[in-house]
Length: 323
Image 1 (cartoon, helix red, strand yellow):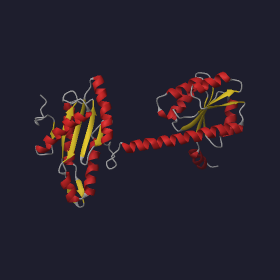
Image 2 (image 1 turned 120 degrees about the vertical axis):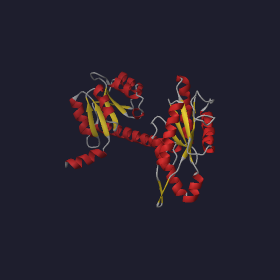
Image 3 (image 1 turned 30 degrees about the vertical axis):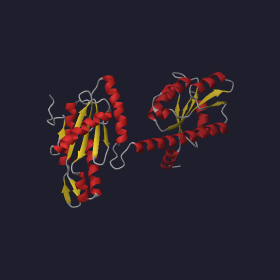
């Protein structure tokens, strides 16, 4: 077998971590499982944990109980109590002696999926490993599908930003945090000016392209901890944790200017669009819920539009002062 053929084979094989300090047992299990699984070997729990952190693609763990530095029981507890969700469904098979009921029961209590007894029977080993690998793979696939559906439910299909539902869910959590730690929280509500006229004149595809372009600008100019959402047809909302009113106003103005400068190509024409925005800040403006905070920003967006558009509004008087 050539090196490239070997690489191709192992790339497609499940990855198994064997935790065992006995060279004899390691050699035996490698012989029994090596044709169906790619094998990694650790001689104790400390080395095994390092390998788990470095190799998230590990599909299954087989561990002995009695080892130096960190026992199999300690490794099990560390795996199951870790907050990283990828460990919760990782199958772990424990090796025990036939008469060792104490270790076997403790292993189950600590989260072991199954056990195999020494001396190892080849057929039993292959059967147990195969069953748990297939079960874990099915669980991972279902979990992946669940995450994909959850992502779909909170994502705007056109712009790939968060949708209205995600904005309010994240907003409720951010508001609770702001209350608890007496921290800043602000929102920007932004609307593309004369968007209906733009759509009617250049067509819905051009309108969609403009929405996507604005979404890219908003994503580029915000932080990972911010929530950028499309909450209506041409309306976008940005949730800004730990951001005061002045910081929010500066960002809103930078975004407004960036949209104004952005060239939008429609057919053989280079067009420009503008946007208006209203801002609101928790603790400064009269709002006790994320819905009320967005309502304050909405009233200021309305003032910005009534004042000529392509501008931001910070205060109810529309003067954008911070006194």
